[in-house]
Length: 330
Ligand code: TXA
Ligand code: MG
Image (cartoon, rainbow, N blue to C red; front, side):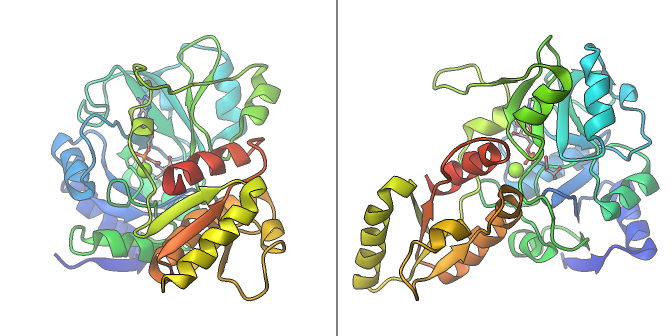
């Protein structure tokens, strides 16, 4: 199969809708990362997603809808605070897990009773969702375990030959996947940290827990138990306190004939020697989130080893960044 990349236009969206309505899968942009979409009510199409990605069949998918779509067609809203979250953060990088009404097929929720729903804010994605007017289930458009894609080219590098079309909506501005929030209980619970932070949720609804995923736990969000986001090169992570050790690691790597790259914030970059190889994540947390996967994917092309320096804390957006850094470089 030949894979075409096409800019989001009326014509390419029309073509995507046709492919999707005929049981196919397409790459689509969102503001977080690129998704691999199929019609959520089509079991065969949804199975294709798992095949194409090589995704474990017990890891459920998120249903994406346009901004005028009535979420209550798909899920039961059981808690009043959910309406506040919808009003404040949708469309945007927030995914809500609620009791499913069974409209989206069981293959997409892996037989579970809940469904994750999200309303992307990306204009090109909204255009597609509006044109098809059906929920599109979509995981990130990478091969299972690999780093998530933030450009159409990244999607192409992983899925070339396996899907007919990638809609190109430019580089994702968010850069890390949506916050996944379990809102079935009295207190919302973060299953996956993202750009909608715990602090923001607490400010709006007064409380927010963080799901702890310990060894031996019955995992609530299956995705978190798998290794994830791995670039195709060696990786290692140090804290800022271990910077001298990280520098030694860099020197050792050079001595053994390799090409090492540091990956760190702009601030830490200034603590490194001039002339060393650096994948600079940038200054603010939002900037670092937006650059993280792009830098990991740049790194796997250039480096034999990425030496990541962790962030000093896990406040706000840093929590989502650190969660990915640990999985990709830990
Ligand atoms: O930003 C995003 O969320 C991107 C874009 C494409 O929308 N999508 C994405 O999908 O990251 P994926 O499949 O790579 O990650 C979905 C996460 C997984 O950790 C999965 O376990 C969790 O959401 N999830 C999905 N449905 C769930 C459910 N019913 N209950 C608990 N967790 C769920
Ligand atoms: Mg993913």
